[in-house]
Length: 88
Image (tube, rainbow, N blue to C red; front, side):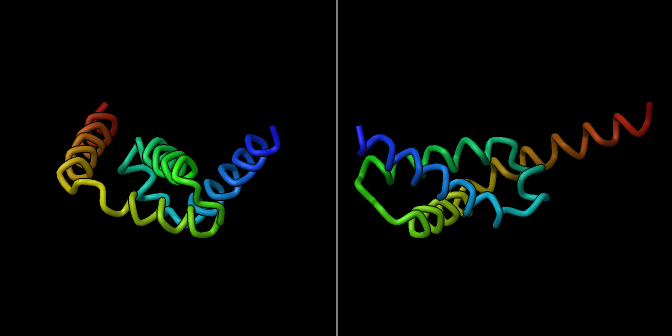
């Protein structure tokens, strides 16, 4: 039981640390960025990593390496949506 509680603490701390270093533009252009952080943090916890700062750092690296095509596709869709909204 203590192991589960420790992992919950590590997860929460790592997520908060990483989230602070993601720009608002990146959050807007990559709507699934929270999910990618979640996946990275959970993977590291399963691997047994025990330092929240290290987990957050690795999660940020993982988010930075998301495929550029995905990011560009989301950015294009966002700009189209904004143009349509301003035309109305």
